[in-house]
Length: 211
Image (cartoon, rainbow, N blue to C red; front, side):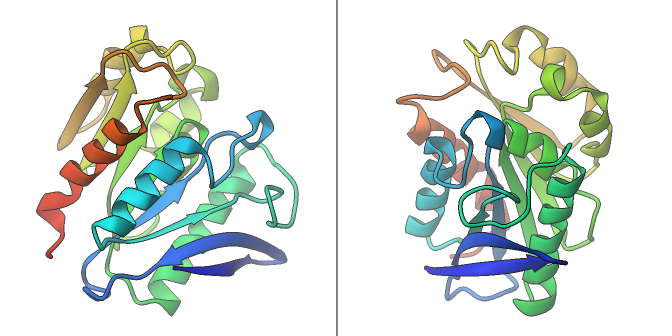
């Protein structure tokens, strides 16, 4: 695992990169963190749970801080700049690291922003959304995250931020192929449920990578 900075024009994004020896044609997972104005960063408990699970299972992955978070330069925008940050990370993985099969994985705000890049490149194979905040983020990111690529939606049944009550309606909007994983007892912050989230991510990815 190495600490790096990824350039997005005049902005530098703090990141941690793990590269598996399985090679660049295997699965790569790009992880996006929750809302920076509510304390979200790449060391968040859910992000760390997923990242560490992938590392332990020898799956290449990268987590990063959006602009203005941690050691990343720049300042928070309306989501447009942050989507550009995701694009910059994808460009880095494709152009500099030569990865061929990238899955996006985002939690909360990071799901809305990250999953909205699903059609940015044909090297993006699909995405995993953890508590997509449809009601909080509006329709823009819902539309941008529509795709016929494989998708997994993870949701806690006690979530009152990404409201569980509207989950099924929003899930029904998306094209196949899609899966859902409801984590019973979990609220939006997944305290003590990080392992269940990480296991769901790993299970979804299994058909797409080779050990």
